[in-house]
Amino acid sequence: MSAPDHATPRSSWGAFRHRGFAFYWVARLFANFSVNIVSVAVGWQVYDLTKNPLDLGIIGLVQFLPALALVLVTGSVADRYNRRVIMAICMVGEALCMAGLLAFTISGSSNVNIVFAVLLGFGVARAFLGPASGSLAPNLVPPEELGNAIAWNSSAWQIATIVGPVAGGLLYGLAPQAPYLVALSMIAIGVILVVLMPHTVQNTSAAKASWETVIAGFRYVWKEKIVLGAISLDLFAVLLGGANALLPIYARDVLAVGPWGLGLLRAAPAVGAISVAAWLAFHPVRDRAGIILFIFVALFGTFTVIFGLSTITWVSVIALAMMGATDMVSVYIRETLIQLWTPDAVRGRVNAVNMVFIGASNELGEFRAGVSAALIGAVTAVVVGGAGTVAIALIWARLFPELRKARRLDGHR
View 1 (spheres, rainbow, N blue to C red):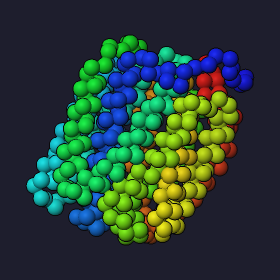
View 2 (view 1 turned 90 degrees about the horizontal axis):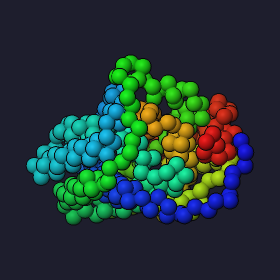
View 3 (view 1 turned 45 degrees about the vertical axis):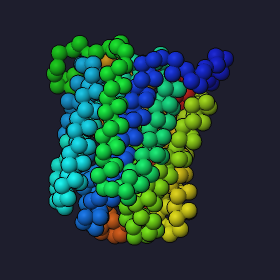
View 4 (view 1 turned 30 degrees about the vertical axis):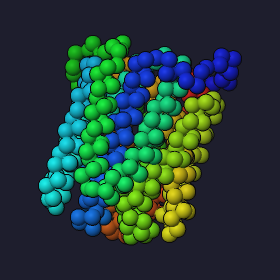
């Protein structure tokens, strides 16, 4: 691949020149903020009720299963119907689930199976929301500003991930129902903003629904080895290295920092990530993207090991922040590659495949972490997982030479 062209300067705020993207960005900020508030509240509430690490894993599992079960449907829906409308409907569904969690908390029930059932519905809404919202961004900005839009999208997510967990911990400390009430209000604002977005031009799939059209996303991912390598690298790296599900155990039993400390631990990765996301918005990756991707995945695993071994709060917070910073680089490169290398007509189906991989690495990774913690202890589970992530980075660098040799993110364009 040729060296990148630095001749044409681009505004670091270029994506916000487009009104649709500005509405979309703020809507996702509020929606992600509410989800992060709920994630902290649910984790603490369930562990407080049962003291069972396995239940923390089940929280992730029930949210992942719908994405896996519906993968052949959600992507096709995003490619055949208006993505903005789907996004609004799914956010309404998430709001209803948050209302259900609020009702459960107010009732004073201790039956966590009710929580798992509500989270299953939450997972269904997210299964449709992910492909639609992920595929919508390229319809809102021109291709040359998509990298900038992805960086700012990541910033919105990380801002929510920084403030949301801290707010969730503080609100839960005030009253168990408070985080759900605030989250419900915020996602309602997000729905309004999506409704107010201007009409978007979308290359919808005109092909008649069939088995071939349904599995087109899988076919495309399998054919494009760079996309396959990027998606599968994230799957196995985070599946092994994810430690978020075990943070309630670290907050209560290892570091003894309470609900507010749990919020701090949940926010720490995002502090590092948003710093890097802001840097990437102004200084995008222009060369050696593949090598950079593998290096930072290995660093993510290394800092996971450091966090797992730490019994000092400030060391743990710094390690988590570095995990977020290194993960942000890989997220930026992976998401830019997937969006720019995928035709719009199949982007929803490819994003559905991507969401299953992300869900497997995050929610299923939480289940893996919970089971491992129940069997071998939380500390050992985190350390072994982090070491596994480093190994995956080395193995994938050999298995996917096309990805390792990738230089420009938009090289084939």
